[in-house]
Image (cartoon, rainbow, N blue to C red; front, side, top):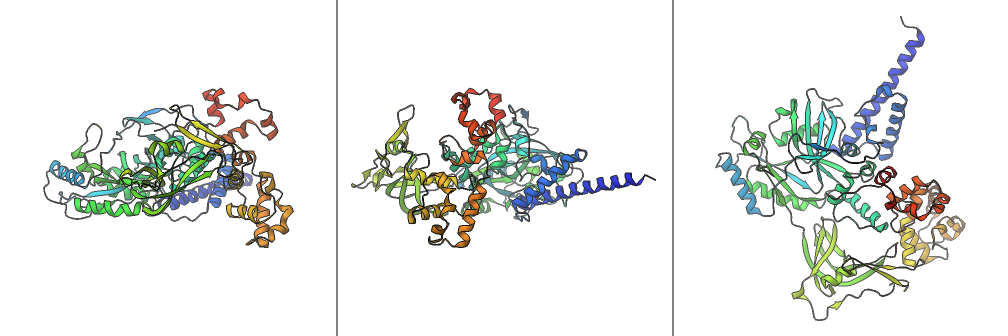
Length: 604
C-alpha cells in the first residue's frame, strides 16, 4: 500500500488533470457553439478568462500537454517563409458562369455524361438503391481564400493554401489562430474512432464588420484600404506572424473534401459529408438540394436576396453533383471538375443623380471627396453617399455634379461611383473643383501625385486644423485605441460646441475632471454619465504606450507600427531619443523585420 503522501500527491495530480480536461472540453464546446451551431454560451471575456486559466495550469503541468488544446491557438513565433507542400488531392478551380442558359447547358452535359436523359426524381439525397437519381447541392460561394485542412485521427495536422492547385503553402500556424476551425474533431466531446485521414476544403474569410474596421485602421495609418475582403484575407493568411490572423478575427466555412480514409470515406454524397463534419464541430453552410436546372436557378435567385444579410461577402452559388460516385464518373479537365460550376452574381449597379460633393478632412489632414446622391437601393440597402476616391480619379472619369452616375457596391460592401452616364448629362452639370485651401480652416494644402503625374492625395498641412483635431480626438478615444467609455463622437461634439470646456488637444481629455460641474450642465449629461466618463478617462491612463501611439492619428503609424515601436522602445523617452535611421523599416533586415513584428502582407 502506497504511503499517505504518495496517495495525496496522486489525488492532487488527478484533480489538476480533471481541471485541465474540463477546461479544454468547455472551451472546445464554446468554439463549436459559437461558430458551428450559432448558439454561444460564453462571453468573450469569460472565454478569455478560462483560456488564461487553462494556459497557467498547462504551464505548471507540462506532462498533460495536448497538441489539440485550445491554448495551441495562442503564442507561436513568426516564421521566415512558408513551405510549399503538395496536395494529396489537387485543389482545382471551378468554372464560372453569369448566365442561366449556361447553367442549363451544364446540367444537360452532366446528364449526357452520366447516360441520363430524364430529370432527377426528387430533392432528396442520392438514392443508392435506385441507382439513377441525379441530385445537385448548392452552396454559397464565399468571397474568401480557399484552404485545405488535414486531420489525422481527428487532430488538425496541416493547413495549406490552394496555391497552384497542385501544391500550396503550409500555413498551419496561422490557421490555428482561427477559432472557427476545430483543432480536434469531436462528437459529444469525443473523437469518433476510425477517422484516419479527413481533408476538409473550405473558405477562410474576414467578416464584413471586421473588414470595415481594418480599412478604417489602414486609412488612419495613411495606408491604402483593401479593395475587398478577399484581398484582406489573403494578405492576413500570408502574414509571417500568426498573431495578425487572430487580431483580424478570420472565420471559416467548409465546402468540400480532399483525401478521406476511414469511416467518413463511406459517405456517398456531398450533402451527407457536410452534415457529418458539422456534427464534428466544423462550420458549414447547409447545402440546398435540387433535382433539376429549374430548381437550381430558383435557389440561385432566392439566395441572391439573402446574401446581403450574411456576416461575410458572398459573390455567387456553387452548384455540384451531390453524389460522389457520379462526381468520379464525370471527372475533371486539367484545371476544373466537370461535376461542379459556380454561378457568380454580377456586382449590383444602379444609376442615380449626383447632387453635390462634400470635401471631408480626416485625422491626417487628407481631404476626401464624398458624393451626396439621390437615395438608391443597392444590394439590399439604401445608398446616399459614396466614395469618389480622390480628385485625380474625378478628373480622369470626368464626373460632374448634376450627372447621372453609376454606383456599385465593391464586394457588396463599399459604395463607390464608377462613372457618369454621359448621354444623360444635363447642360448645367458643373465640374467638381478641388479645394485650393482646406475647406475647414482655409490653411494651405499639399498635393501628391503618382508616377504618371495624376493627383492621388490632397492634404491640409495645418496641424491646428479644427477638423483634423476633431477626427483625431474621435479616433483617440475609440475602442481599439484608448477605449474611453462615454466619450464618443456625439459627446466630443457636445463639449466642443456647447460649452467653454477646452477640448482641442489629447491632453485636454485628461483634464476634464477639473470641469465636472460644467459637464453636468450640458444636455443629456447627468450625474451617472459624467461619473462613467471620468472613470473611463482614468482607466485609459493604463492602456500602455502602443495604444497611445496608435491613437495619436499620426501618418503611417497605425496599430501594427505602434506595437512594433512599443516593443523596440519601452518608454516615450526612449522613443524620443531614437535616431531617425532606426525608425525606418527599410533599414532593417528581413529577419529583423519579422522578429519585430512587421506583417508580410502578400497579394494573392
